[in-house]
Image (tube, rainbow, N blue to C red):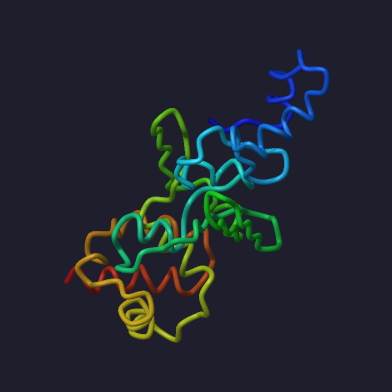
Length: 195
């Protein structure tokens, strides 16, 4: 279970020095520091459960979500998350994995997210369509839909069969909030692939 330092100090208030007790608990691996002021009680907790608590508001997206949904074939070990209006990408190396955070447009941020409840932990993850739009937002603009298609197939290694499964109407709706040519070209490409 995720706990803040303040929560733990409150639980340890009966000790003469709650801070010293907290320090000993971390040293003895009774609790596990994640980032400054944040702890996890179970070393085996999957990183995806912790991503939203480390830096936020945020949700799981980009490469990690694309891998999670099977759109890209490679295993992704860095938990990639989306934020907004932070202006600067962040990276955290923790005992639970590496976490990166980068911005998407604020108006796109709250759209097409799924709230997942697993084992008493809640986390937000982008839908497959939203994760791909987030990814395309961060990549260099393509010249046309054909170049985007090549980039998706060759660079990201997303198969056409997976692209055809995407909800084209949702991508079209999302494209209005990204203001980027790559996402607009994805709408065109998805229409062509369905013909």
